[in-house]
Length: 417
Image 1 (cartoon, helix red, strand yellow):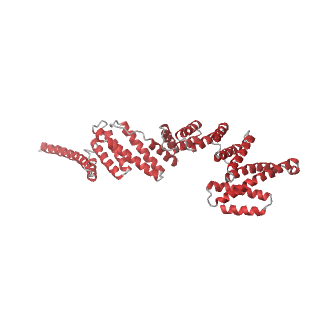
Image 2: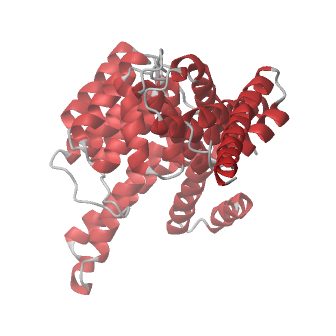
Image 3: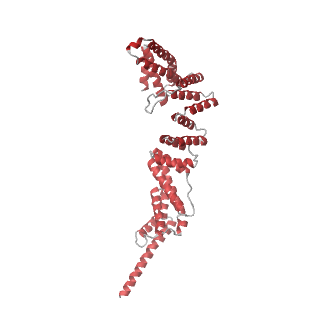
């Protein structure tokens, strides 16, 4: 009797194993029939049984079912569960024969579902979630490509760029630099923002060599995008390479002599170089070639005004050039002690202040008239410039004791606020 009992126990155990393996087969069959609910119930039963839960085939089928559910529901979470299941199957049996035949397409579907979830978060501007899902997609691709499953997922340059872009928006600067640099190395041509943002990152890091390199790459790929010319000029300006900057600006004007905007831009940049500011916005020491720079700026402001007499910005800028020089002389005048206030030097400075204020006034008045003509159509930049113009006019009118005009300007300033 004892032997018979033992024999029956072994037979029972064998029946249980067969039953659970039948569950795996049944799950696979139900998957083929697209009866995902029954397939998942069967495979869950097999995963809960000690005899089949460590079987590579069980985890392979579980992965296929989860992938089918994730693809159908467009669920990245289910897709990533499928990914974990596929990895588990290959951990248990790295050489399983079914992998090439049965894991190839499902793993690619997992990759696509997860990447699409990343794009969904990107469109919703949920930058952190987008980065997470994009990175998950790359993890799936790296795993797939490392397992010799009969195919490969090629490097997606667009996905690489958008991962970097989302990371930049999420203030993950290291991740942004890594992915954007890779996208640039891959010569991604789908979006000029790649080279704009990457240039900004190199600028922030103080990496001048890569900064100018990426600007030049952007210019080559997107020759009509004016942002790269602006970036190049900013590079030369911020790195103190003023000779190259001036040369570049002059070449631009020579190529487009009737481009009023280019002439005005040239004048403004010369003006800024002549009057540099530190990182806190305070006046920095004047360059050695100040007089040359400011003289060229004045000439080109006048040229821009000749080309477009009603240009509010050009008139304001030329008025500001004279006004700012008057402020410098006025500061020198105020620094004289009481005994020097009646000296020839004081009279000379006073004459310069009045002369420059008189030069500035008509240009500020023209700018005022042009801004007024625009009415409520001023953008933020115009509004700021107009406000500066009115403050300057108010000061000049006050010096001239033209109180009625001071009040008129005050009303215009109040209306801007």
